[in-house]
Image (cartoon, rainbow, N blue to C red; front, side, top):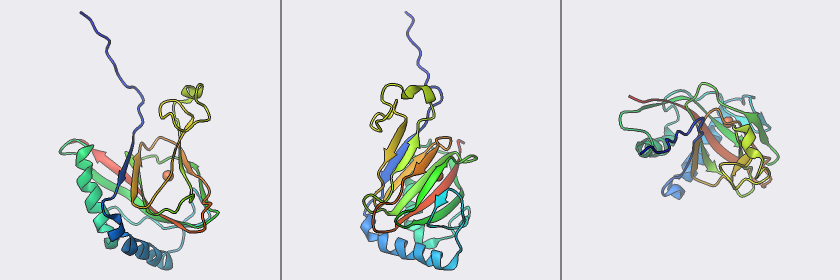
Length: 194
Ligand SMILES: [Fe+2]
């Protein structure tokens, strides 16, 4: 007897992960990023306001973040098959003060895009992912709660949250409406399935 064959075409992926025991590390991460800001002039890409570091390199040039990298590279075993080779294509730190935002953009050349929220006060700017499948917005156009069919999907950042998604998904960051900086580390990953 024949059965339906299912193939998910043009898929987009989104993963989120909370860093265990984040309060143990937060202070050294925050201090490390502010130290970088005092040493490095800001780049201007999608950011409207705020400080964005130059490329911090392809490996681990900021040792104060090692506990984070150890944690996520270990956790990648849950989602990538054994033997996959995962490397950092480039990465940069962001400090977004009240009133700053990021315009719509995507990350060509990466296999996945990651953001780690080092300090993310309430209302400091949602990450808005735009549905790349344009015709699917018809039914739930203005809701962000239907991951399959709304025109966008919002993520409200919080301390210690790591978000990773497909690089072809256009995204923006809403205005920081809190009274405090939002601090994050953005990472483009390349992944080779061995
Ligand atoms: Fe981005």
